[in-house]
Length: 562
Image (cartoon, rainbow, N blue to C red; front, side, top):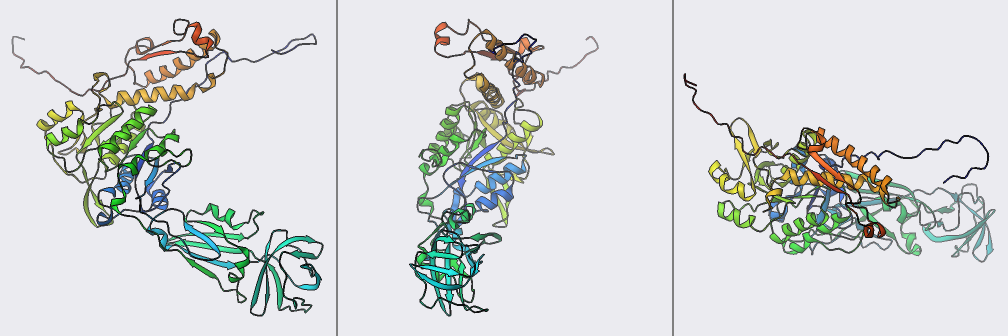
């Protein structure tokens, strides 16, 4: 409360209306799988197109080397082809994969992450000294009077070149034109000539890193650990390598009198083998923030709303993914059925493993062209389906069931199921993808794997995720506000305005907002104990629109008597 001391009129602003509440995105996908390169722990990386994916995670993988674990790149590509725009990727690495490294005595250099790709990295280092001078007088105690000390600073690595000899040292301090070093120069270091042959120079250099068509250049690198130009600091920005500078006493090997560049190659990188991958590789480990792997790495990501592990149909992995989605309550799992399970009973056997409204199963696999092997192959449908989810959300809204939608970029199906077979699979929650004459290949199912009839439709669960996450993120301002009737009224107005927009968008039933939803935040939803313990309880009910799954036209013959 403001204090008033002088007579007069005072104007104060206060908040009485609710805060604006925007809907969260529901079209961001999370992908987990084996890749040629890329980080395998920490936060999943965002890609918005296939060029970005290739730059970070490489290209397609061969069937011969990676078998059924090769489908990540194809799934991400299908996601973008079918309308997706944002995806977070986490790489899975076989346990026996190795990081390419150098055996160079000057630098500890490693490829940024594991894989044989690192063996193709080339590093070239060129001298690029910024300051040069000559010694006029030896003062003793490793102190030297020089012609000009400009550009020399404490901590700088320096080179003294005389004839074929290169001596390395570090600057201890600089005062006027006197430089103190940590090591002595040769006794005959003095050179008063107009064209000196004995040169004292700072040891800056330029690092060129290349991998295929990718290249990075880092200029003005130094061995001064206290400067922004320190090589470890500069190359921390590299997407290809990580570097740790070694003992400066060995750096005389780096700089040649003739200025010839210094080259380093990496070796020892390995992709690992299929035997190095199992369910635990995908399930991951929770090693704390920045160190999580596999599915666990998505815990810290609050953007993803669709999750898939393309082509991996191990029940342990799929159940872990579903548990992840259920636990967070903010995302939905798109699951593949094993390709070899084409018979109805085999499909149903796999289906019986799940009972969750946070997951959906799709079958069969889809035919696409493989640019790597120059032939058609069959890929799991989850990547394409995730793209259709994103497209449908963008064009129609999350309330629209992501079905009766064309799958782009596919030329065929691994199995052609007929209507009779779908009559068996659809009620069980298996969503088939079918080909219709003149209408393309379409998703022809919209059911979750839940046994609860209230949650049998995908769009219902995803609509609730949308509403819940939107309210959660849009009411963060409420925390620590005074918990009284005025706050309750503001919260009510905030949520009411949001749900009214959702209703007007066609996501809720009813001819009026009162028929579409209700909000109760009052003494009837909170006890005094709740209030005393800092709890604000708001009860919300919404009436979602269900999809027209079965369209029935009853037709009869009209006679003259009718």
